[in-house]
Image (cartoon, rainbow, N blue to C red):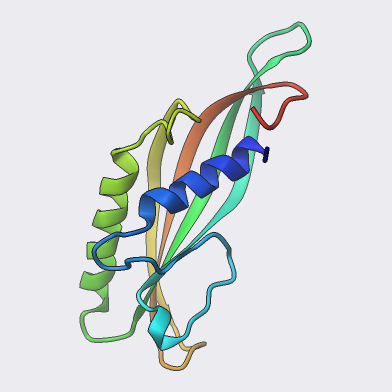
Length: 145
């Protein structure tokens, strides 16, 4: 079995696969293939995790706040902001339809969105970055759940 963090990230990928605009172009990695045939697409990865101790006696119960990042990539056009907003709305709908990440977590919250553009691919890209916090519990010494 894998770390709960991995299980949650993979569940987010599952929840985002098949969205109307991005379809199956969802990748469980921060290294995203930027070829035209992969756009629009999403890259999902873990940014950080904070731990609070809920109990005093070992093995202690841990309350974890996982920050996951969903990067949105679209072809740069005059309407790329609207396309990013459409995809962001689809992502939020998918995430909020499974707040517990199939029972792995207590809660899921979209906490930020940023948009930018860049020219590192075959053509300039529009990029959106959504940060998501997922609250879950684990037992000390049992990171796989």
